[in-house]
Length: 140
Image (cartoon, rainbow, N blue to C red; front, side, top):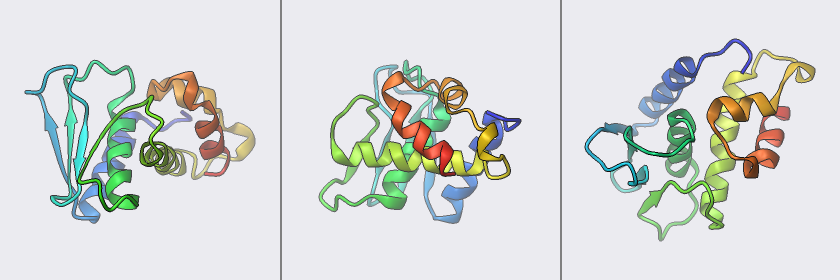
């Protein structure tokens, strides 16, 4: 992912949350099968640090932030992270999360030097995210 570390991206996401009055809770008391979630009314994201997901915490956090920053479904009060769901609001959150991260990571990298496959590998994203990753990285 060029020369940007996941720690730098995490710091940026935490800054973005603070700037938008979103509380981040990193929980180490949830079971490994409990999904991360965002609670719209409380403007709170809960990230399960014990998660058994292969998807990096950085992407999961960006995904939950995307729900609160860009969420469109007014009837949903709690969003749960799910990488394989077909629900429209989850796909939008995946896309927005990808754009948030790619824009930060590749802001100074010419398009010809961007590698979306490496980007996906660093974030632990499955092959099903390839189209979303390619679009985000190339348009960052």
